[in-house]
Image (cartoon, each protein chain N blue to C red):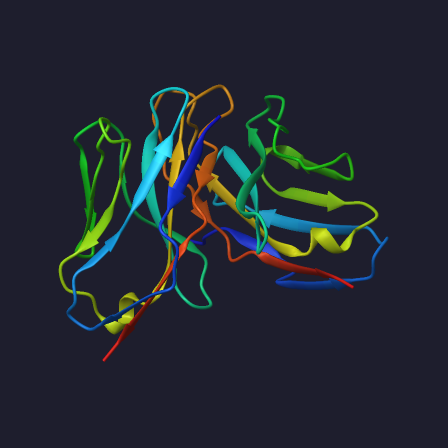
Length: 117
Length: 114
């Protein structure tokens, strides 16, 4: 079946502009994660959604970052007033419900490469 | 907090050479351990995993054993191929109310030459 998809694949924006990144998880996966891959920080967790539960936002680097997940499926990561240090590849992953005490594999999308000029 | 340390790259090997990529971790709790691979131009893929001490994960000729006493999860392959050239990430997760968020190492680039 279809994997995790993300759009756009590349985004170039000017410093100070807002951007929205989209993630379509695998159908039936209730858990969704956002990560960021940057040269300086490596791969780091940003936010986690599980069904209708309150998201775990503990990895968001500043209040300029926010994310939502509508209808338990598609997710949008929004970065307001972008800065050059926001330049990175933003990865989305989805998995089956992990609340039952089992560790399910996370399937990653191809990522969105964000460049802030 | 949780952290993963893996050997610096790049690692350059000849085809059919033996590969070891070292990975050690610190964790508050009992983690599951993973190796992910990122081939050029592709997304992250799970290579193998282990969920408890002494478990051995294996896939595509790669192996790693969960060593709780040394907090390590070293990746090995007996005979690498050019097609194994990629970036390899060691990672851990601890199942909590916050799901299985992954903590990654910095990645090790492997280049295999003929």
